Image 1 (cartoon, rainbow, N blue to C red):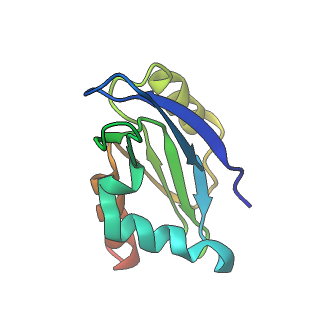
Image 2: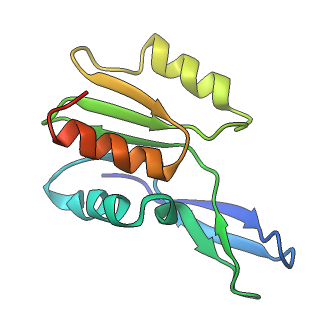
Amino acid sequence: MAKLKRIIGICHECGNNIEHNYIDRCEVSFFNKHVKKEILAKKENYFVATCSKCGTEVVMGYSFRFVDPNQKYDILLVRNGDPLENRIINSARSNDVKNGYQTRLVADGTELAEKIQIFDAGMD
């Protein structure tokens, strides 16, 4: 099961700290199919937190990995400019991808949802 983590972002409108709980990896299973449904429905908004002070919505810029062992695909979301971008990509290239899985790299939640839909439709 995925471990819940916490990230602190800063509201670009008022400067308030925004605490956001998240998971950085989702492997589709019977117990967490709701995550897949949320990503498909919300797309980039799945990664948004709302400032408690002014109500501004802020995209939380964390990397995320979506793995479907039944369909055998692995999608890695790494945001452009992420300070760990190169390290995350190199790790995925070197040893972190299972044999026989189709692997894709995306830069935002909308692309992630699109890749899930493409793979689920049996396309590449």
